[in-house]
Length: 105
Image (cartoon, rainbow, N blue to C red):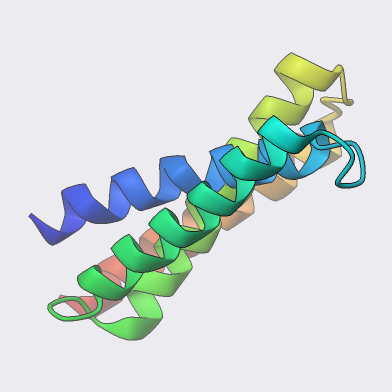
């Protein structure tokens, strides 16, 4: 169950990152409200997962998934670049997070 909660927290973290950019420098009130709600929700869910999962692994998965999701949103929504080097860096992040998970066993 903790892994499912962590996955939801990671998705909400991507919403937080999207809303941070979409707020246009804190000038769009409704988006700011989404951002604040996402910040609180993702942090709360993350804290719940640390009750049963190792802190290092939990935080690495959360941030890693948030990074990957934010890059994907940037590419798909904001037309940011998808260069070979950038995608390679994302692959390294995913591999690093996976290695932490396997090292836990």
